[in-house]
Length: 129
Image (cartoon, rainbow, N blue to C red; front, side, top):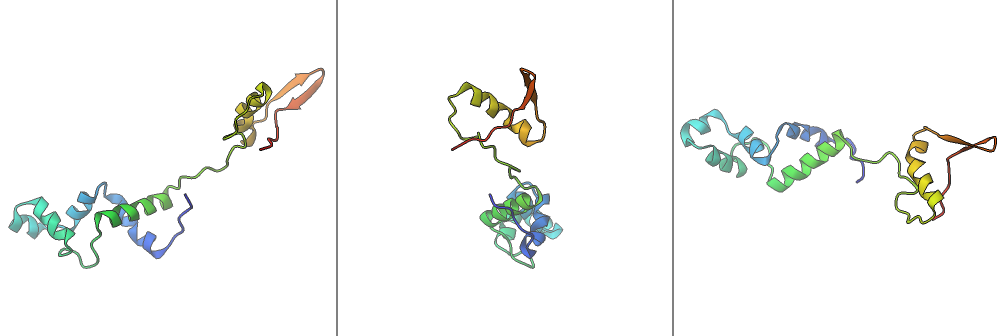
């Protein structure tokens, strides 16, 4: 998923993070007088969903979920910082399999060495796809 950039819409929708569900969002639009006169939270939510309890636009369930997902992606991005070269390869060679196991630590800068006949070899390898 591509990174979400800061737009006025995303900045305005940051308030949606406080609501766990769409029903919580609708309940926030119900005022105290609604509870007094209607005697039902569900009727108050229905009136709010129809747009009678908001000075701006009342979001539909789809709009709410889409905007909330955009804000969460903006605040807490889900991306991989790097992709391993061996990730989607079907490796048959045992040596290359072992190197693939060590690739993540190599990418993070934790290089391992093993001595062979007086020489040290780094376990870095380049894969051909």
